[in-house]
Length: 444
Ligand code: GUN
Ligand code: FE
Image 1 (cartoon, protein in one colour):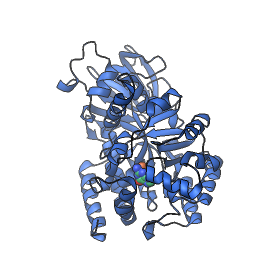
Image 2: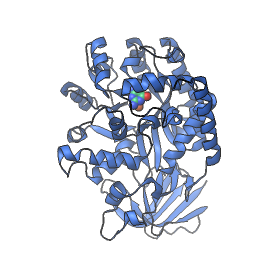
Image 3: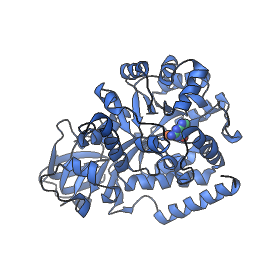
Image 4: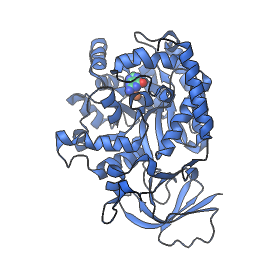
């Protein structure tokens, strides 16, 4: 048994009462065992002095593509369908085992360093086992799955899948990785988007996700060109079509949902579908601005994600929180998307979206110890006197203020030193890998 005591720290709990106070946190193995002032703990394997620091629940990002981290800076200033066809699909097609591994580690390093402790990740068609190996080694909490794509135009040959094969490969990965490390890793079926998937594939994903009780993670209604294709091919809009195939339920995560009609919103609300809002990606790909205040008014589950490195170009929750708040204010007024609302989406909201509202997303006894220690003692976060800590975190803090990250009771970064990966090796491996992929495709 390993235990950890964090002493004298400002605790932003995000519990029901939104309590914030200075106290101690005692962690036993993976769980928060006690919280209180001056806990009478005489011995701990490790003690962190939290004086002058702030501790928050680790961020939950509900839409990430670790396999795309290597493509950062390789696909700027394009709109979604061109971005996919001209850059992202050919690059994904060029991936090999080592490049997938380093792409994942590079992304996870950035996520851990910026305070994200749980992700919902979509991989590419091949080599997904190597992404799971990186996730396993890094200590991050993740729902992940291989992307499924058995349909579509201008898809590189290497990414074109046969329906049965796509399903079989997904199930094989599920059987190997779902519930790994006592559930730190979970499998999520990941059909790319309606444009890339046959009806037969989506129906089978619906059946299998019910059978195995796992999540389905896909993109929907991100871009107007995408919606035109879906309407032309199915006669329906994305969410209506997914519902028609019995995919709309509380285990579905839809990335984006920028362009929803009233019927789609009704389905999302009634069937308790989860939306992953990705403001950085939506702006950079010129997709649009999702009407998040309207969705939240209807009690729809909206959490946050950075999407992939080539459409953002960071995986930093501080960026996403700031954007999520600021982009709505010109339309909905200054009180829309206040700091508390946005911070909730980034923590407990994300936890609920992945079905783990009782396990992560807040600092409470009995929950998993997914904790992030911030040092808010700097020019850009001062003065602190009488300022709400959540305002400081959402509107002023940056990822550089993350000092220590703990996932599942394990310290994965301490005083900005990575504990589960060798940073130099990851940076070097990432560069070497992208160089090898680019060599295969001189026209990119
Ligand atoms: N739609 C289909 N594939 C993708 C992808 O890789 N990224 C984004 N943002 N949207 C998609
Ligand atoms: Fe995406």
